[in-house]
Image (tube, rainbow, N blue to C red):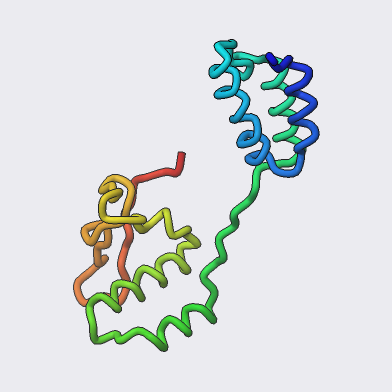
Length: 146
């Protein structure tokens, strides 16, 4: 005590399996130092920050890929939906929109009612029939992904 930058960097290098695990293991260093009235060795430590950035770059960020909506999945969905119910028609319409527009679910639907953003998420008034008694709709949404 106190832990030197070299010691912390070597410890981080020893743990190079998962970047999030390294951050969790290093998190215990701060309270131990504060308990002994020592300065936080993690705060503003350029050497350690550089090593962590290098580890993160070499390990890469974990990719959480979403599976696409396939024609087979659409057919399975249609089997379980009752298209005489308006809620099931909405689900079917959203699935077809996602599939045909190659959208991700987050581009069209809100994850919860509390996080609904009318400027970003799809609303009924965003779909407009191009002419009376037409079988097609025009989707109008002016939002780009940052």
